[in-house]
Length: 208
Length: 183
Length: 180
Image (cartoon, rainbow over all chains, first blue to last red):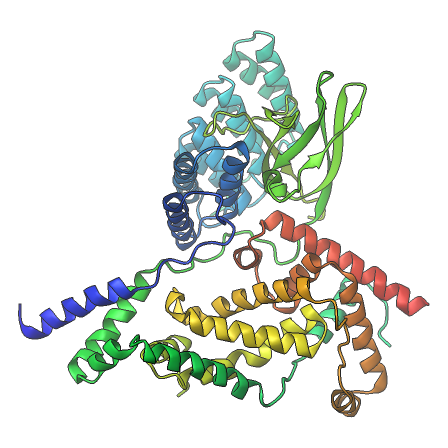
C-alpha cells in the first residue's frame, strides 16, 4: 500500500472515530435501554430509506412500551414488522397506499404469501382500497381458515365488487360460524358465496 | 376585511397572512456570532480544533480528509421518500364507538395506534352502563391496531372486530379500518 | 456560487467559525416567522432563535446529515419554543411589540390588513400550545406529517387531530370576531 493510500485509510479511520453519534428519534425517548434505542433508530432509518411507512413501526414501539415488554423484545417485533412491510411493499408495488402496505403486512404475518396479495392488487388495480380486504384476510387466516381458502374468498369478493361493509359482514359471519364449531374453510367458502356482488368486475385488469 | 366564504378559503387567508416574511432586527446575526465566537474560542483553548487544523495544512491530506468526512456522513442513513398515499391535508376524523361487555370490570380504557397506546395520557376512558362499557372518539381515517385495557392491567381484544395478527408481545389486539368518508 | 449547507457545516467543523454566519443568515428570517407566531412576540422569538443557533453550533458535530442542517436546526428551534412557551408568562402575545414596527406595518399595509393580522395572531394565541405548534408546522411551514412527527416526537394520528382541532378553532374564533 503506498503512502497516499495509507494516509487515506488512516484518515478514514480517524474520521469514522470522530463521526457523530447517531441522532436518536425523539419519539423513542428514554423509555428503553440504550442498545435497544440504537437498534430501533437504525431500523427506522432503514425503513425510511426504503420508503416504508414509519408510523406503524413507531406505534409497534409504543405498544411494546405500553405493555411493558423489554427493549430486545420490542426491537425484535419492530424488525419483524419492518421485514413484513418491506415484503408487502415489494409485492403491492408503488401504487399501494401506506394503509394497504400495513394491512398487507398483517396478512403476511398471518402466513399469506405476499405474491397472492400482489395478484389481488393487480386484479383490483386502483379501483378500490384493499386495506380492509387484507385486514379481513389476516383475521380469518388467524382464526384457522386455510390460506388458500382465505385468499380465494377475498379474491372472489374483491373481484365481484363487494363493498367494505359487505366484507366487514363477511368477517363477522365467518368468525361467528367458526366460534360455533364450523370448519373454518367451509365457513369462509360458504359465506363468500353469500355476499351480494357489487358492480361486476368484468373489465380487464388495470395496467399498473 | 376578508370575505367569509368557504371553510377552505378562510383557512387559506389565515395561512397566507401567517406566511408573510418576518424580518428580524439587523443586529441579530451579529449577536449570534458573538456567542458563537466565544464558544469557538473556548474550544480552541481546549485544543479541540488543533489536530484538525494541523491536518488541513497538508494539502494532500486536506482533500483526503474532506473525502473521508463526506463518506462517513453519507454512510448515515438518508431520509427515504415519504410513504405513498400520505394525504396532503389533515386526515378526516370519523367518530368510532368502542364497546366492551365487561360487567365485572372497574375500569375500561381503549388504547391503540391512534393515541400512542395511551403513553401520552391519551387513553380513551370508557363509561359504564350496566356492564356495557363504551366510548366514542374521533379517529383519523386509516388502519389502526387497538385493544381494551381492563382494570388498568388486563389486555383484551375487541371480540367484535377483526384480530390484528399481532402476537409479538403475547397480548391480543384488534384491527380497525376507518374509512375516509370524504372520498 | 453559494455554498451548500453541507459545505458550510464542514468548514465550521474545520474551525472556520465565520462560515457559521452564512448559515445564520440563510435560516434566520424563515425560522423567525415560526418563532414569532409560536411565541407571540418578537423578543421571545429572537431569544429562542438565538438560543437555537447557539445550541446548534455547540452540537454541530452531531448533525448527522449536514445537507439537512436546516431541518436539524428547526427541530432544535421547535424545542426551544416549547421551553420558552412553558416558562413565559410575562410578556403576553403582542405581535406588534414596538412603535417602529407598527409604523412600518402601517406603511407597508393598509390599516385594515394590520387589524386582520392582529386578529389572526390573537386567535392563534387562543389555541393551546400543542395545537398552535401543529398548525404552524403543517400549514405555515408546510411540513409533512412524518417530518412533524420526527421533529415533535408526537405520533402522526395525534398530530392530525391537533391540526384538525386548531383549524376548527381558528375558523370559529375568526368568524366570531367578524360577526361581533
